[in-house]
Length: 129
Image (cartoon, rainbow, N blue to C red; front, side):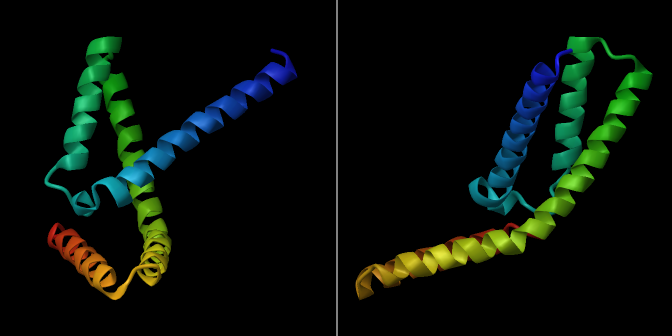
């Protein structure tokens, strides 16, 4: 394989992996923050659904399925650790953004905005066990 083609493929793979990781982080912190934390079988259920689909689509052997499940479990653990490391930074960015927005509002708007933010935070915390 030509070096230029190989480099292009590596860059494309990195871009795709980055997009997937970014989407996962975005979904975890911004889209459904109440779903964070230990889920009622959420990760295991998702992993089983993915394995079932792969088994059906790719006709996996039991040995392959077991090996792929191990990869999924390891990946879930790694992503969970990354989310825990990134969460404080994400919160800091969101809090700074909230403060900047509040500074541009009049008193009535600011009161409504901060009340809504507090309610969202309360719902987020209630979603955790």
